Image 1 (tube, rainbow, N blue to C red):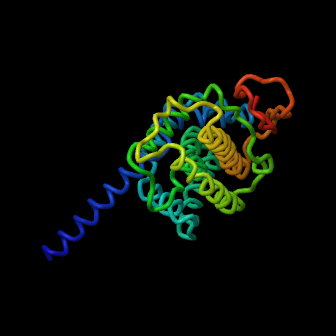
Image 2: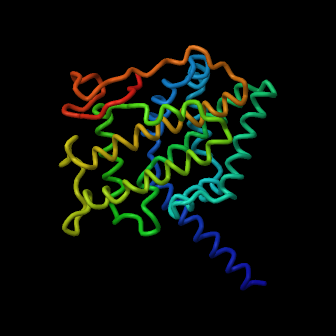
Image 3: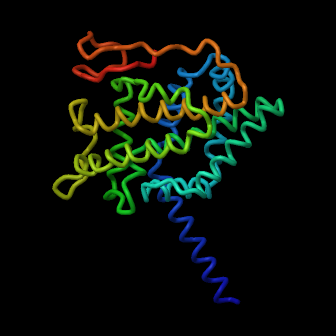
Length: 272
């Protein structure tokens, strides 16, 4: 009995260590807040306003996101495949949000909906899709520091316009596509930020670096994924979908616009 208890305690401790390590590799809270604010710009004004008014509560709820669900998501990201049991758990979480809205518990529903920001943001993050080998110590911190320092240069574009019209039932397939795209970019972070056996200081990089390309693409992918996930649940809750702002279409040969890195050649719908 004592031996069994010791094994269980050791297993629990190992799980906590694993969780702490993965959590340290997830989007920092400051970047998560920035992602959520940019995603709100893609929502109908009524929902965006409700979320903005409860931003503090949403951030607190996000920090308390169920660890067992986070572990399931991170395990799937490492394997590159969304498992049926994870989809079931996420769908149950979504059903709770919809139930709150339909039960006229709007404030609770908005907070619970906002806290789901963690899920699509993580699916869009190449760091979490690096596989079981992960990155050398220090690489992840330098990458996130580079993203934070580059926010004023990243052109926030609508990564997938069709995602804005997804139904709740289509979210798992969409999330799987996010995982695949994030996985394709994860190796660039390792190659560019770990050279000659040393971690590269993010301050030596600029918008011409391949890391900027990954940061820019993954940030816009995360913003789009967050908004798409929120909208799918809000739509099923029969929420107000009127007066959604339309993204501004920009072309590669246009003059630089606010939020676009000098010399950037990316084109597509830009979040206004």
